[in-house]
Length: 246
Image (cartoon, rainbow, N blue to C red):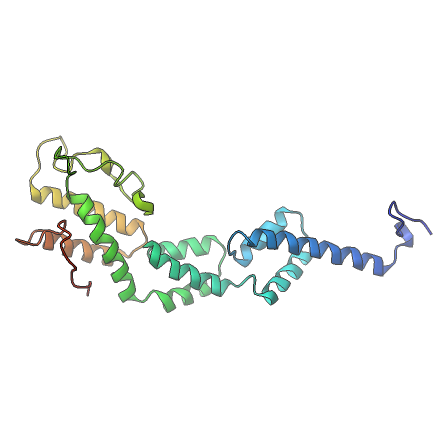
């Protein structure tokens, strides 16, 4: 009998039991690798599979690891999609962008669809978009308190990501924070109506970039622009609650 360095059998003298023990140990190591990665945040099955492949785990062993993780409840694509959908409402990320994010993470399309249907009915999308749009409208329209006629720098950058809010904020003439709110295309003074039009176009792009539907964005922007034009009801005043978006 030929012994290996650790005193165990090797080569032709190794038994099926020895091979099985080595396989079990490899699976345990692969499970530990996956658990360390899952400790950072929840992952989809596809993400875990790709992670294990990058660590050289065989496909058959990956299947065993995933089966064990599913049994323990560490991997669950349906739960992941539902939790992501709920979190998106807090982040003010629309359902279209959320859908793209989940699909990129390898969550099956049917699972994504079920999660969105359960958590993002049409009225929720309108309410979340309306809440976000009201805050953004005030910032897009109002000049800075300093009276220089320019939007506050840092309020909206080229990605529309101030205050942790990402989205489309880039205008056709460059980042929205780089132009006077009261200036026209050539720097000429612009009336209140022109400023509202520019703010409306900017807000529409922002909402669509955040993942809200084009029809929802258009209806909200139109309503805000109309209210801003009503005497005594400037949308940027921020002086009291408004009725919910219908």
